[in-house]
Image 1 (tube, rainbow, N blue to C red):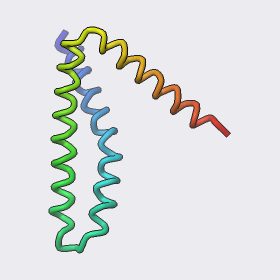
Image 2: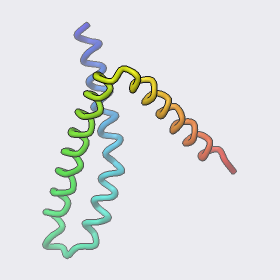
Image 3: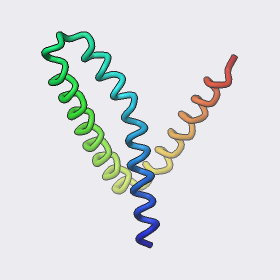
Image 4: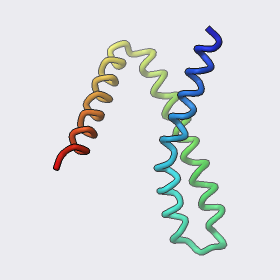
Length: 93
């Protein structure tokens, strides 16, 4: 059981890192437009804000899904529709 939990945590952490790549691109593109003396604070602030938002929205979303029973199938359906649209857009000529 402990191994299963550790594998699940590792997979969630890997997914979070992969999803943070788009945040890194957005933050770096914004930081590239500011003067060089302000770049490090802008990068650090952007990363911190992105991490705080990810934590807060994950916490809020998990609490909502836990408390509102019908929300879990709706969220699953939304993920399925988004995934289907991504596949459709990828293979569309």
